[in-house]
Image (cartoon, rainbow, N blue to C red; front, side, top):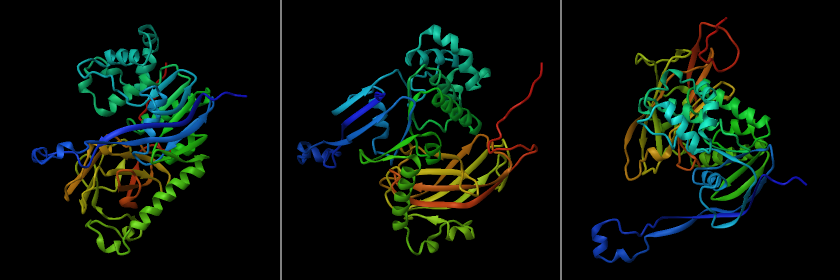
Length: 412
């Protein structure tokens, strides 16, 4: 009988969080609240059980705070479980916190060697793979520059290029398949597919259901630290999407058409808008590199998306999402603002969220920019506009496919 590569039985992990009764003002110390309980424990993972066999790719989905990243870290040896059994057979490669070992004052070359050594490679092994790492990152002209001069996309490309050049039997991937521009994302996905074809065992955490369905053999749905469901990708992702849609539908006011805040709301907005409207999306503007509001763009050009919002509640760390999709719903790219970088808790306010896409490498065609603001754990949408904002992408060349990567031909 084939032995599992990863075996998890009754796994549990406990963390502490600040108690609601903790003293947070000086006067509370004088009134005795110092003696109140400052911390309380909660189970991030509770009785998680599953097995993964060699060559399988298993997806892990669920709302933020469900325990997905914690599960990967425990499997990767970062921390120990408080209860249960965990056994891993094989060398682990982790694509978790990319660039965690980078140093801003060192050059790209120095950081390649440092991050490679941290990942378990020898200096000789890094030297042997150096050209491959550089070619994949496509940063040859910047390697002698200090890392502080790199854009965030360039840093992630360099980190990913190093991480995938580690010989691993098991690969742990946590929400990193959206690094860089669209062409680089395509390279990342192709590399992941190569690992799978070679028999590498992989665990993939992602909010992109299309990626989960395309690459994974089975899916684990975590909810409140427990395994809510485990089965085929199509079956589980549909059930997960239906639960979220059901909660959003339940919270959507029946008179949502009268609550529009955006002056550019199109006719489609009445029927293609969903959410509780506790945080509302107002105007959404597509801006070209010259500052003009557009619905047409040449492929390879930058695009700025401006999203006005108004919060009617004290919303703790809402999730902002922009998706570029085709008419049939096929997702071309999804960009999500990390919840830890934005907090509306304790305030009711208006604001403007700006997303800058360095270059939009899409082929000629008609697309839609879908925008949404979600509850911090993705349990429902505050406001979601689907297929409301059209974008026509133009190109001087004709070719098939969705992505139009920058390229050139040479001959010797």
